[in-house]
Image 1: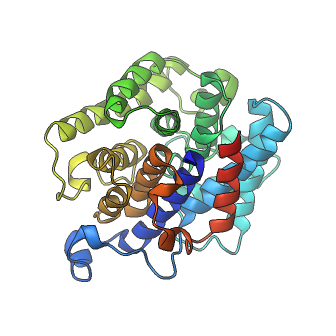
Image 2: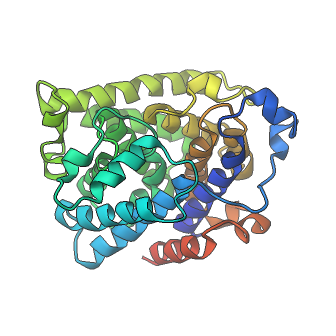
Image 3: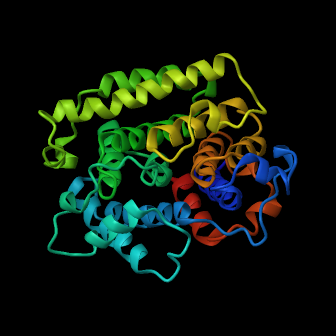
Length: 334
């Protein structure tokens, strides 16, 4: 079972499914697909900036790991270079978010410290929708995984909730890849959030908190984890009374912001923990940031079930297939 391969393919499949439905209301989606269970993978199966930036992060991680143990000093330069290259790429034409565009433009300026390039007021989902590779790479310590997840977020989205949601997303992917049962996730994630609520990763983030003008780094960090804990409460309430046919964006949020994208993507997975295809279809058949929500759902489902989760007629035509398979195979062999 290739869990890394499954997660990477799943996030791209979810991204492609949601590409067509993003920005659309449910009644408009229903005009061409009446039942969410029958949502087709588009032809061609093109992805968005969510998958593109996931691959950019993955390439940067591979460069960093080739130099030795993962550290802030080894991670930041290659990921920064990959994000700047994505900004300049002709393929960067999939309606990327303004936060990513503005921050990556600043990251392309060598004289500017990365903390000064970051959008410290933005908690858009553009950071946690790309963080799955950090949860998939084996052999990292908890400190490395958490610090790397937050640093890659902070390069573009420096709001503390964006950092916490990225950390939670990477943690979720890792737990699933290690075999954690889906039903155990909400409690484990809540414990993790409480344990890290005032832990500022200064080694990885430097003086980022000072740029946000919080009274202390601990106050800065707690703001983000508190918002994630709040949305975990909404997730628990939703799972206590599951509704399989309700637009998930009406339950845990539309997903434009980091903590809601995380919670809604996880909700869709937990509603259908043993049916990955149903999970990504439910996530994509939604009224909010459908591609990012389904991207996260696909990563969770793929990390749980591995590459057999996805129909071959989907995986054979997903965009960037060769690179997704190469990375997944590499990490699955470790």
